[in-house]
Image (tube, rainbow, N blue to C red; front, side, top):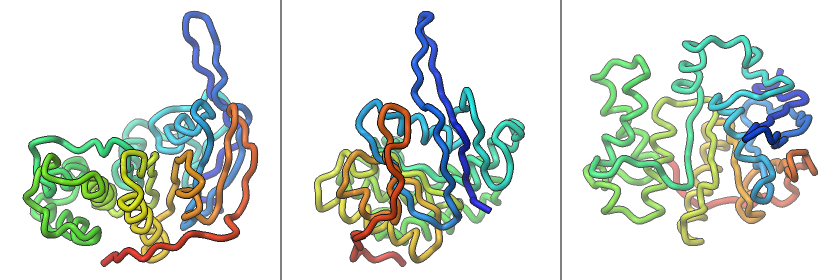
Length: 238
């Protein structure tokens, strides 16, 4: 059984009596442990799709089944549990709290996790060490490079040990060298730790770290293919 499945998924936005169909009859399945890139130009619907897959929005038509259960059948408490415990998010703009240390930023998701507070520091330090930033524990975001900020965001996404990690244009604000390091780490999370990865990108270079690329255009799937020659990273991951 697939971990995630969408069937004839549709999303329509209404603005001043104008209807905009952003997703049109989109269907695919993602098995647990797969690394999938969702590609498309601006306006193709890829961010809207990510929001639905990540329990941040609901479709206006079709079905989204996560872990064997239809999104429509999750109550508010269950949605909150899935978001906090099973899903991790990495954003292009990092979304770190300013004037707050790396350690405190990474601990943030644990606030709502139900995990005992005495374990928070240990779990956060483990996640930070896994992305090679143990020497930056007490630094604030303003003291970090762009690549380091994104690695903190990865550690924060990892701290609850989620099933699925969503990476939304994770290299968009980085130089090429930092971007490669970030993609190396994300690929290793999939390969060495078994996280299911959903990568949103408009860059072919970045998408080729995945094992499968779904291309969207104007809200429909243009192609869905395995990557023939995957890029492989050299980054460490403890």
